Image 1 (cartoon, one colour):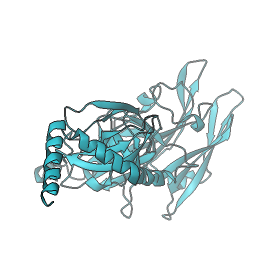
Image 2 (tube, helix red, strand yellow):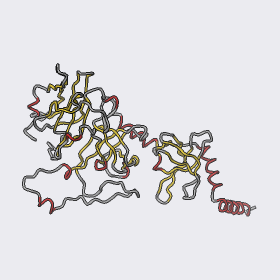
Image 3 (tube, helix red, strand yellow):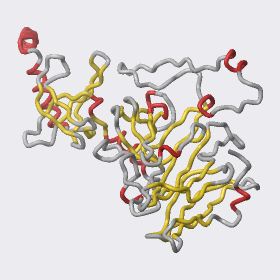
Length: 379
């Protein structure tokens, strides 16, 4: 009688070795069906495969598409790659393994949704696109625990806000395919510092890293929001106005003042010509009490449909010190835009600029009566 358990174990081992453990997978599947899923995951890849196992030679069981939900049954790490055992919601309730980079769990998805809770009522401030694959993060920090998932190169998004973060001397952008953080060589170089001309102002790019808080369309990602490292982001300034930029002053935010308005989404490259309010920024450190302005210039451009050319309606005569968001209100030809400017008393207040058409049909801007107090002598 004591020999029987030993025989059972031997038979079990022989069956496992001869079947490549496929039989064990069936047993696990049966047990997990009884236990039930303890989490859900949403597919973030455009398409991905649910496989028989996480081995290289595994067969594909089911193709799933972005936005589809899966029940998570188990999790494992194989050769430093995370895999989830999942149950699909197809008619056959297919169970198998999927690589973690292709899905986002409900816990992580909820964190992204919380970031997006501040978006309602705030218009996108700009549009951007990734130059290279980059991690979407919960906060402006390179730590691995803050990663939501990796966005593919070329992904587009709306920029809701941004933040200047003092440059660190250790970690750089973590776009390495192996998942390891690249080490930076961005520490301050004494020779470069010594070579600076006396009196030359500090440059933003030398002192800060830019981070963007972005809003993602469901067609790009089920996760609606997160932070992206600015070095990987290319702003999608509309082609018809991009040449109004200068080398020392770049456009960082723009809104339409005509029919192609915010309810249609952020205006990007390829948009039709129209009227714009644009915020710009020079590459010079201008921190007050440790806080940098989001923008230091305001420009209003209008398109003359008869001459088929742009003309400058209004621009700040000197540098301003402003913070986001930029808001546009009104309808038809009766519009206004609102910015937040720092006054001589140090207070940041909202200022409204009225936009109307004159009898000749040309656009005109009426700035706040005290606008001179908010402009410094500058470029």
